[in-house]
Image (cartoon, rainbow, N blue to C red):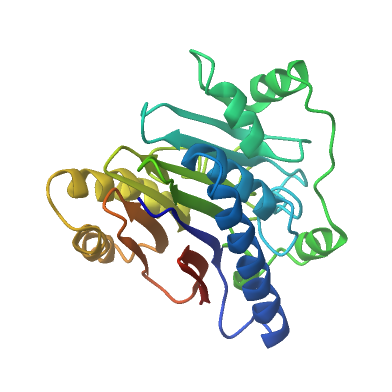
Length: 282
């Protein structure tokens, strides 16, 4: 089985994003997908999506980990999740504060019976497992917060989907929220609507979390692949249904047979893939 990976860096606004920022995001995604592909050569799909998502969290061009958006009360709360296509175990953290890489805490929760934690419980678990205090706020995000944000910077959730040489699939998604939201609002990123994987397909989503949850988007696409749809067909049918309420979403995915696909309802989701050769588009 040829190993494959696809990642996303959320959306940006064509009208409000400079060419310099667009190019920087594309270059960052290309570098990260290359690193993820090299890592995948000697690691599992699960290990690779964690590694790659952590790289995305560490890049302040994206709204996850470092540089996450600030909620309306002035605090940063992040969410991330992980799903293993082999065991179909799902883990995640919701609205966690003051940690560097939320996706790495989701890894630790894979070993727990209570595998999705929120708020102070998630933070207590992180500290107990050695994750030290880390301030992910950047001066740019504080400036944006003071301006109450704008559409060009609100939709930068990140994610990674991988297929390893053994044919195993995994998906990971991480977000810093949409910015200026009601404190403790829950996004799709730590739910099966935004991040889902089985032995048939794996999906990571970005966009407006409420729309993605309403559509049960990631789980729906995977279910359709399981029912016999090609990955492309599953995406297209699910996005047609999303249009019924003008849902704003993008998704990336890989199926067990190696099919890679991505789709967005509103331009432009930024993404990159590595399938024999690297590709980056928006």
